[in-house]
Image (tube, rainbow, N blue to C red; front, top):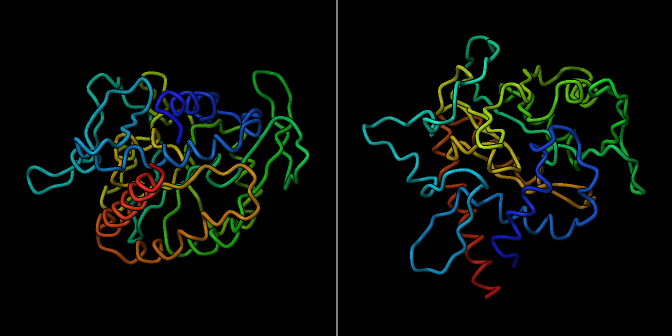
Length: 288
């Protein structure tokens, strides 16, 4: 099992939030990256039990806090909308997403959640190429789609209000989503890096700024930093690079079916994340 320092080094090296554009170096150490991402994806949603000897991981450069339950347990019968620290600065200017609907709002990350992109061609398959210009420099982005992406889109299209929220740049992500969803079945609203809250070098997606009731919002993201302000609204997923046998998106569908019909997302996500925590803890005990 990687040490805490190894995981934090991985996070700084591989998280797409650092550059906001595809990172071509990810494939160089795929095995360690996948293992580290597995631990990091649950870092903010694990119950920290003092004295158990468990590994406690926090995002780099962010203040250490208690478990996701303790950070968001209501004190007056209501669910807090955000754990935004006082020193996080002014919130970013957000576009109007329009009035809320009766559907749950499902926030989707892009890189390493739905696709893996690189600025250089790789020997393995490439599903599509996108030409972009960054700071006046033209380039080509090579994109691989996560297995079962089409089935995932088809499943969520009619069940949720879908919002793409990425720390990447719109000049890359806008054409990418247009290609991935050519018929606009998702009717997606799109948020990019400028809509994230930059705090201590990290790009955080503050869901409380979306104009939606927090008990009707959920986010699918491979990075725990992304949902640092609202970890109870998270649907963690392992980072994906190019594993053709990956079933991460497919495995979410049963839970998403429940989520689409719930009154409060916490009725589904709290037990779902508790089960992930127990599974991880059991796996850690077996490795020791």
